[in-house]
Image (tube, rainbow, N blue to C red; front, side):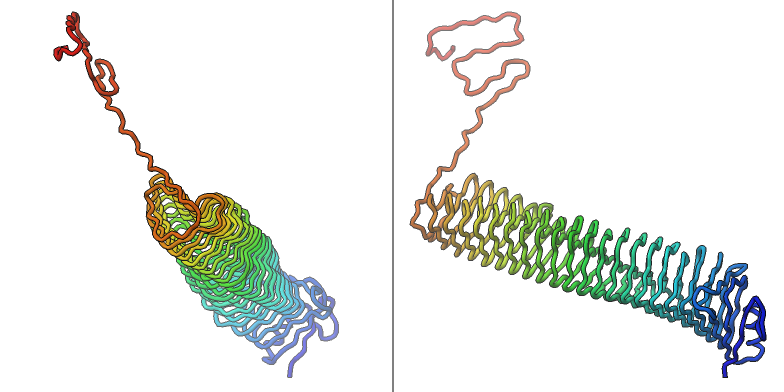
Length: 568
């Protein structure tokens, strides 16, 4: 049987003048108690023990309790609070020291520090309530937060630490100075929530935390929308991040699974994986990223499957030792490169479609450890080059198509480009181009409708076999400078000009063509004339014949006889 107690500062039959006196009476009887509180402002600190229910008689907000010191509500037992407004200062506004605590339709206001503290081995439920300014702390406890609002926390709105397990559902977190929800060496589930205006990551998992996020909306964040660090794990499903610096990040060994998310208008990156983190990203969309849509650096190694990248700057970028595997992604309407692999990074790209980007693959800053492997990739309507391999990078293309651009595949400096079963069409300048000291090796390459199908210059080395160059506007192939190599069992057809401009250094084996081959004599550089420099005398160019010289002499005596006299 539950004992009923009424509290009214105005007095009345069997009414207690304050809440504390009613709690004392309930504790003396040692039974479950329901304390019903009339409207008013109560300047008390409440210590509640046992099985007690505190209820505002006239609904939420009608009863205001403000402690004279720090804590305004301190509970041990099984306590249920409904409709009260609790204001604390300095210390924990509300503390659950033992047992369970349920707060419904409650407002907790803390000028700073902790608004609600769920101590170890307790269980706290916060439902349909508002927390202002302070943070809600779960340390080694269990928690459930439903349909609540957290506003302007001085640091983290909700902190889940020291092995706590908490579920946050259908709530709104706004204006937190640090994080919206921070999970540290603990576990949290965040579902159907809105987070906005946080100073750091809206959702943060660190120190081997487990964070599960689903169906959330995150906006106007000064750092990451969601961040996993320090070997944290978890999943993010069907969540939208808008107007953050980074959409979703992983660092220092973290390994999240992200599915079906939309990352829009991120100022820097959409997906950011670094410092030995991993992560699997499936069917995500990154729209209008300010710098890079998907970024891997410093040992990061994401796996990205499916999804779309659109209307940003760079699509996928790997740099400074970043790695990654990318499959089944559509990339479109960027202002820079679709794929970028720089500085010792390695990327594997499969079943990728790139449309209307200035450049396809870019390895401009590629050292000897830089490698890119492309399989079943299509580049369409690009402004410059579909594939650019530079530095000392190594690029392998299998079943890659380039359609409508300036140059299909380009390799220069000391880079290597290996091409298997690829197709290039409608290039205004060149199909495949090699220059510098680069190496181009291709088998079953088809070039149709380029200015020149194959171009080799500088000291580049070409090794082509079983390839075809058709309907090229100028010629099928042009070899200049000291470019060398072999072209074996290839065909040139349909060009209005010559089949090949041959510099005599590229071996043409079994070339099939009805067009002329123009042999250009290799230019032999004349030896530089002998130059004799004597800095105390004249400077003489060329052979010295029938001449006499003297310098630094006070007197000179010259005799000249016949023209052919050997003494002259």
